[in-house]
Image (cartoon, rainbow, N blue to C red):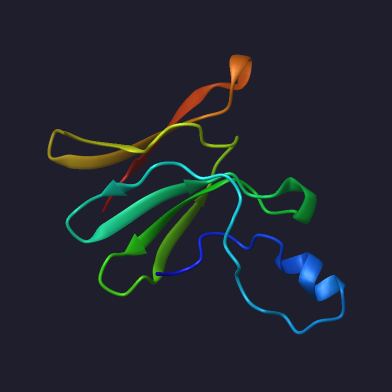
Length: 107
């Protein structure tokens, strides 16, 4: 298991305590599993300057292999599809007029 997000990390540092590293927390989406990766969206923490992101974790090690900043907070579980032999991951983000789908092609 690994933390997903920094949570209240900056608040801990601001209290004069040693940096504890990522603490996890915040809003997140459901998981998307592929053969080797786990994708999870995270809402970030605007108060701490953390943007909303989609993270890809290596399932075997828990290491973050890639992070993509999203234009708005993700609000749906990422989706996966193939088109013309190319694999894509799509996540819904935003609300109202800011709603959109963000599609990413996997190598």
